[in-house]
Image 1 (cartoon, rainbow, N blue to C red):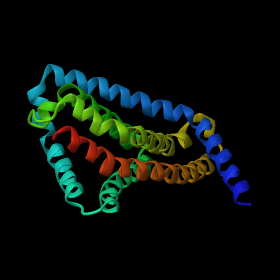
Image 2 (cartoon, rainbow, N blue to C red):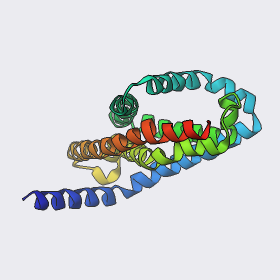
Image 3 (cartoon, rainbow, N blue to C red):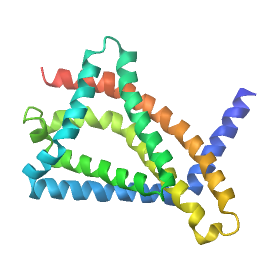
Length: 213
């Protein structure tokens, strides 16, 4: 019975993600657009970008300090997961406002990645080499970014799909169906974020500390 249930759940998610592929593609496109924009801005106006990102850098540094100070792997994982899970939940929940919030946030997240790629060492006061930054980001980003894209995709769908001409005559039904889909997507995103947080708070942290020795 357990095996049958797992297969049924797998098929449900496969169908769900395939049907929503256009929204996922839109989310990825926004992220890539943000990455290119952030990279270009950081290359052309590095000082202005550093000043604009100072509050964000300070907020990330505070979370990083909590992670480093945590006494065990589970606590480190929880600190990171709690922050990221709250973010992706907002992506979906605030999508009701015409899908604008998840779209803007996805672009902004891409822009931050672009800035880090361009001048990441300067953001850290020149103390971190590009290789160390890649080692600290890449392992968990493999799981974290898909979670972000999925949450963004269904946040946008939640705010837009019921307004499209194809939903005429069944708009509230379309909205309820999308909300149900979004709940499943959030569960999947949460699972990805648990893995990402465990890697970031433990493997990535240990790897960065080792490389900086």
